[in-house]
Length: 280
Image (cartoon, rainbow, N blue to C red; front, side, top):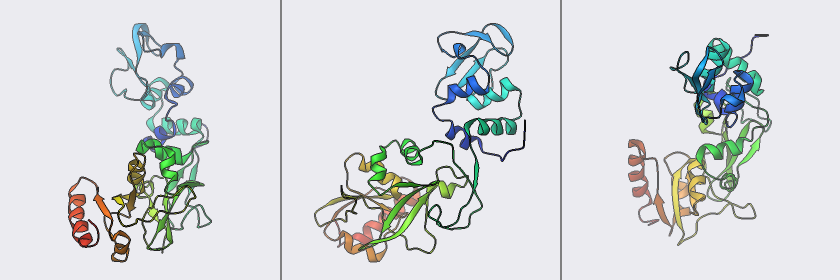
């Protein structure tokens, strides 16, 4: 290796290399592309011999050699480590360098960060569209994230949050962060939590009206998924409704669709009780 590089997790490296798995096998592991056709077995580029080597999972970039690489061979990272003879940390560093990853310290509140003061490293692969990455992760169209005001700002994807009458805060998602809470998303420091509302064709938030059928879910990502199926969906900031928000749902038909876990089931019962007499 040349100079020491900052460490990245395997998950961050594989996320950055999504769609480039075969390239990593050829460019980084040094495996000739003609050996990656999946149609038959080939001589192994490491140990030689006949009909020992083949590609077994194109999506993961996993390869197999019946002689020297028949265990611990689940993805392209393992293949790079094996065929190059590198340590695992060295493999991560070399992969990061190949992908053009650069460690980014938390930035201040200049429009790229809400200023929570984290000391995380947020990964910014060259040419990555974080909004598209979020859409791919949730299996929904980018348009449904945009419908909730989603925009890329530096290394963050930002979403507006609304109170009863107007915007009250901004929600930040950092898809490349090494902190789980930042990948999930965080509200701006010192700002009130709000609701994720879909926007109309003019970019204005759509507040529910009496007679509307509205689905309530946890967060903006689930809201975007159901929005892509044509539902009027409002994302909650977790599992709760502020009392001050209740008038928004007067006369509205509400479908509660929280996470199917113990906490979600318990919260659903509480929300139903809170909405009783206001919404059906």
